Structures are given as C-alpha cells and as structure tokens.
Image (cartoon, rainbow, N blue to C red; front, side, top):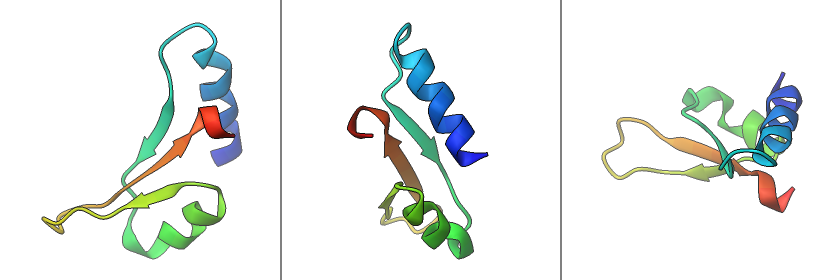
Length: 58
C-alpha cells in the first residue's frame, strides 16, 4: 500500500505540484515507515510527529 501511494504521488507530480508524501504515524510504526524511506520529524509540542517521503529524491 505504501509503495502504491508513493508511485501515484510520483505519477501525479508530473501534472500537479506534488513534492512530498506526508503522514502522522502512531509511534509504534515509525520504524516501519523509516524502512520505507520516510524521514521522521519530531515536534517539540510532543502532541504528534510527522514523517515525509520526498518523491523528487526517490
């Protein structure tokens, strides 16, 4: 499912301004998304964290 979403983002980026795939993961799956190539972003407010996949770097 992750690879499908990224492939669609890459496909659509040829026609629209799409650069990143963003998500707000539960903490117990952060490692899974890191293995998929996502970059982890910790927020100081500690309410939620974000991750992104830069489709231009793939």
